[in-house]
Image 1 (cartoon, helix red, strand yellow):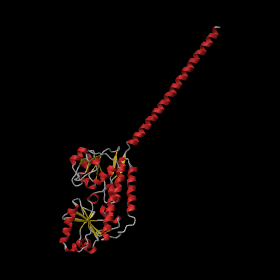
Image 2: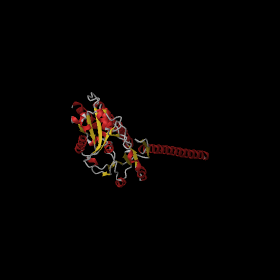
Image 3: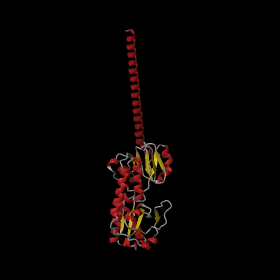
Length: 334
């Protein structure tokens, strides 16, 4: 009887130890599962953070590669066209060009920071954008601005293609490539529609850029020159030698202009359009050679809108194309 009691006691001890062993193993397994899930969750979180704050690298109009460790959050620009593109893609704009005229409502309270010819560096430092969008003329100030932590990204606007490249560039910076592509697709479609059935192919035109007393001929590598060719016109100054400081423009050669006798003369200016037209017509009247041009004799001197031709029109470039097309059509009809 005593032996039977000892045997039963041993069985009980073994059962308890086995149960403890199973609990320990179960706890260990549960711990391993929890740890695995925690690691996986942490890994997923790190991937998501990496996606949200991924490195961004863009190539600007000068061929510079500009890298960002995370998505830039604030922007400024000195060109109304660049501001237009930034606004169209929903950027946080903290600095805009100084303007004498009305601006879009959403930009009314945005600080004015000068223009490409006279940037206000004090204001730029105050608004301190992550990114300054500017033309290559600002390269002289690049080192100073980047020492302040402001990244420079350069753009160009000498053709419709240039403007579309800027749209793509801004889309990359904002992480809105699809929106940028949609904007560019619309420009392509509108341009193709506008070019259908052009009736003014070969209309000879002279594009004159300037202010009273200073006039230059716009060449095909300027935005107005590009729009002229897209609209079917012929730029009579296409082979004029360009200016060293202004490669998109050339000095007016009165002899060649008379020889090629443009059917329409188009004026491009930053100033008061009517004042510039009056001053230019007065200038032409002083020179008997100008008076004999068909365009002058028949009153085919057109002032192009300064907000579309005197500056970068941004996403409104198709408006500029349509104005160019209409001006050529009017010149061909007279």
